[in-house]
Length: 130
Image (cartoon, rainbow, N blue to C red; front, side):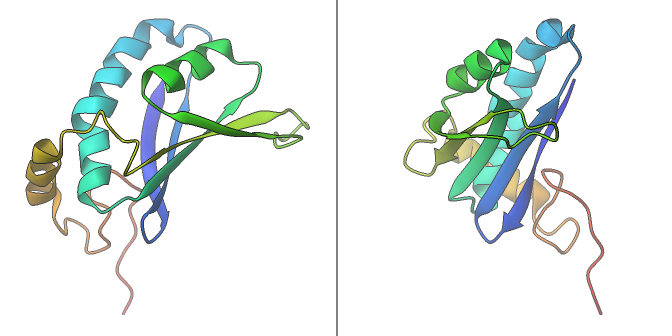
């Protein structure tokens, strides 16, 4: 299983994960990483909304998103590459109750401007232009 997040545009982030059928054993570790590292980093970078999408029939992913405090927003019919339905979940600044902002400030200090694109270790890397 792998997981991460990337900023799509100012303040809007996408959280993602992929795993095999055997990913159940990884969920506790990834949950700890999400709550202790990734969530605070994303908050420190000024995220006001983080979205995640999950296959509508993936019970494990849906339960996990709920346990992480995500809010189910809507059905995305035919969203998958083969026409599968997905569900959209999100966290907003108002609902992001699992992120201790004192930790977020520490994460910001540690990750500030590590790649000159305000993405640090939480998002995709890119080179500054110019």
